[in-house]
Length: 343
Ligand SMILES: [Zn+2]
Ligand SMILES: [Zn+2]
Ligand SMILES: [Zn+2]
Image (cartoon, rainbow, N blue to C red; front, side, top):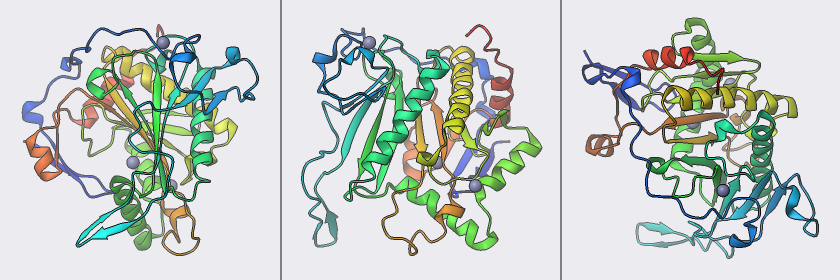
C-alpha cells in the first residue's frame, strides 16, 4: 500500500510509492552530459573569469593569487544584477521590481576536482568559512533580504559542462517562497508549543534511529520522514541556532566532517549521482521585534541534499505532491551501511 506522508514543518504531502519501489541499489544515475571543455576555474586560468570578489585565505588585491584555496567570482551570466535600485511598482494587480541581486560562484578548489566529497576536511572547512563570509557580507546590503547558497553537482542537477567543484549564491531582494513556508511553519509550531520544531524533530529521530544516517559531534544527518526524493538528506546542528553565519570555528569544523562523510556515502554508495544541496538559514532581519519576533527561537538552520535520481513530472507540478519511490527508512539504512573507508 502506498503511503501519504506529511512534512511536519511546511505541511507538504509526499507519496511514498512502495508499489513502484526499487531497491536502493537500483537507482542508476542519469547520463553524465556532454564532453567538458577547458576549465576556467582551475588555478592559472583566472584570466578567463571576472576578477574575484574574494579569495581565501583572505589576501589583499595586490598580493599574488598563487595562494588561493577558495575563490569567489561574480557569475558571468547573472540571474540578477548587483547595480541599481529596486524600484518597486505595480501594474493593476501585478507587482514587480527591478532584477537586483547578487549572483556569485564559489570555486571550491584550485585543483580540477569534480566532487566536493573528494576535497580534504580542511578544504571543506575553508569552503564553509567562505560561505559564511559571503552571506554575512551581502547581508550588509540593505536591498537584500535573503542569500541562498546552493550547489548543482552533475549534468542532471544543472551542474553544467565543467566538472570543477563549485557552488553558487544568489542574494534576493524578496524572501523566497520556500523559505517563507518553512519560517511560517516553524513559527506556527512555536506559537503553539513554545518549542523549535526542528529541535523536536531531531529529538524524535535520535530516539527512533529509523531514519538516522549519522550522529557525530554536534550534528546529525537524517533522511526526512516525508522525503521528496530517494536519498534526500538533511544535516542539522544539534545546538539550536537560526543563523548559519553564526557558526563558531569549532562547530564549522564539525560540520565539515559530517558533510564530507555524508557526501562520500552518496558518492560511493550511489556511484557519484547528480545532486543539489541548499543551505536554509534565517533571512536578514532589519527590523527587530515585529515580523521576526520569535525567529531566533523558532527557526533552525539546516542543509538539504537532494540526489537527482528521479524526475519531477506532471503530477508534482500540478499538485505540489512529490512521489518518492523509496521508503526513507530503506534509504537511511542503505546510507548507514555504505562503507567510506576507501573513499
Ligand atoms: Zn578545473
Ligand atoms: Zn531548534
Ligand atoms: Zn529547509
